[in-house]
Amino acid sequence: MRWAAAILVALSAAACGSNQESEEPQPADQTLARHEEAGDIAASLDRPEEAIAQYQEALRRAEAGDDLKAIAELSFSLAVAQLRANRPEDALATATRARGELERRGGTQMPALALAEASAHYRLGNIEKADQLAAELEQDGTSEVADGASYLRGIIADERNDAAGLKAALDHITDRTTPVRRADRSELQARLDLRQRNFRSARLTALEAAKFRQDVLDYRGMARALSIAALAAERDKDFEGAADLYLRAGRSAAAQSDPETAKPWLVRALELTRNPKTADAVKAALRSLGENQSSSSASSSG
Amino acid sequence: MIRIRHTDEWIGLVVIGAIAVLVAAILQAGVLRDWFKPSEQLRLVLPESGVAGLAPGGDVEVLGTKAGIVRRVVLEPNQQMYAILEIDEQATPFIRRDSTAVIRRRFGLAGAAFVDISRGSGPEMDWSYAVIEATTERAPTDNISALINELREKIFPILDNAGRATNALAEIVERINRGEGNVGRVLVDDALMVEAEKIIKDANLSVARLNQILVQVDSIAKQVDQAAERSPNITKSVEQSVKGLPAVLAQLQITLQEIDKLSASLRSSWLVGGRREQTPAQQPKTFSPSQVVP
Figure (cartoon, each protein chain N blue to C red):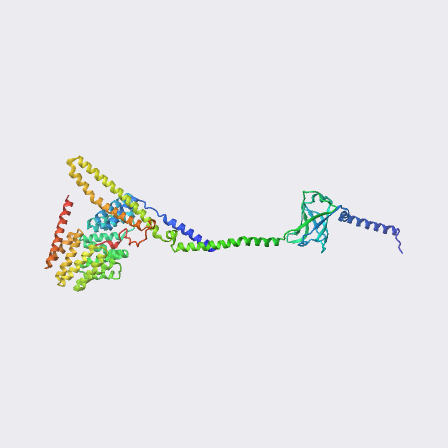
C-alpha cells in the first residue's frame, strides 16, 4: 500500500511538473519574435537580403521597446547577415552602433559583436583596426569568440608576411574539434605550408579546408581555401591544376555576388590555362560576372 | 473491708445499659430492618452455558438501583439451573412478565456478578410462582474477539482487493513508463508534446506570414489599380509594385517552407496515425560567433 501511495504521489508530482513546464511564458513582443524568426528562416534559406530586412524590422521593434538585450542580439544577427550579403560597411555600422549603445548604457558587453566588427574591418581593408580588435578578443573574449579572433589574426598575419604571427594563431586553435575550427586550422596550416614552400602539402591541406568549409556551407571560406590551393598548385608548377582551382574559386565568389574577389581569380585562371575547355569556362564565368555587375550597378543607380 | 452499698442494683443497671447499646447498634445497622422488610421471591432460570459467576449474596438491580439479593443458586443435574432471588416489595411493580434478566459483572471484565432486571411493560407477574429467564452478558473479551474476527472478515478481502489493485496499478505504471498505450506515449515521449507545440508555433507563424503577404498583395493590387487609373503614372506605379515583389516572393517562399514543415510534422504526427520519423537536426535560431566569416 505504501508503495502504491508513493507511486501515486510521484505521478501527481510529475503531472504538476509537466503542467508547469508546459506553461512556457510567451515572448513579450510577438511582432519582434516573428520578424526575428522570419530573419532566421531567410538566413537559413541563404537569402541574406531578406534576412537583413527582417532583422532590421525586429531591431526597430526592439528599439521601440527599449530592450537593450534584444538590441544587442538582433544587431549581431543583422551584422552577420550583412557580412553574408557582402555588405561590410553596413555590418561595421551595425556592430559599432550596438557596441556603443551597450557601452553607453552600461549593458553587458557582447564579444561576438566585436568579432563581427573586426571581420567587417578586415573586409574593408582596415587591417590594423581588425587586428587590434581581434587581439583584444583573443585575450578577453569567450572561447568561441577567441578562436574566431585567432583565425582572423592568423590570416592578417599571413597577409603581413608575419610567419610567427601565423604560427601563433595556428597554435591557439590547434586542438579545436568543431568543423568550423578544423577548417580554420587547415586553412592556416595551408598558409603556413605555403610560406614554408611545402606546396604539395599546402595544396592538400587547403583542399581539406575547402571540403570542411563546404560541409558547413561557408562558401565564402571555401572559395578562399580553393584560391590558396590554387596558389600552392601554381607555385608547384601545376598550372592547369591551378587554373582549374582558380576557376572554381572565382566562380563560387561570383555566384555569391562578390565580383571584386572573383575577378582576379578568374583572370589568373585565364592566364594560366592552356586548356580550351577551361578557358571557355573561365570566359563564361567572366561574362556572367560582367552581366551581374552591370545589372547590379543598374539597379543601384535606379 | 470496704463494702459498696447497692452493689446488685449497680450491676443490673450496667447490664441493662449494655443491652440498650446493643439494641441501638442493631437498629442502627439495619439488620432488623432487613429481617422485617417485606419481599417477594423470584425464580431466575439460569442459562445452560453457566451461571456467569453469579453466587448467593449477589445483588439484584432494577432500574439501576439495588432491589434484592440472590438468596440461593440451585444446581441440579435433572433440571435446569436456577437461582432464588429475593426482591424488595417496592421493586415488584416494575418487574413484569416481559422483563428480562441479564447477569453482568460489576466492572465489565471483573467484579462481582449481579442480576440486572429490566423494567417490563407487559402483564403483571404472578408472584406466587414468579419465573423469568436470565441471559449472560457477553464478556468484553468475547466482544473484542468477535470484533477482531469481524474486522478480519471485512479487512482481509479489502487487503486482497488492494493488493490486486496495487498490482494492476504497478502494471499500468510500468506500461506507461515503457511508453505503451496512448497515455504512455504522451507522458513518456516528450517529442510528441514538442511536436505539438512546434506545430502550433509553425501554424501561428504561417498564418501571420500569410496575413502579411495578403496585406502586401492587397497593397500591390491597389497600387496597380491606381496605376491603371492614372495612365501618366502607370510606369512608375508598376515599377514600385514590382519592386515589392521580390520581398513578397521571399516571404511566400518562407511561408511555403513553413507550411511544408507543418505538413511534414502533421504527416508524421501520431494524431493522424503517422509514424514518428527521425527529425533532422534543428538549425540554430541565432548565429553563433563561429558563423562570423571574415
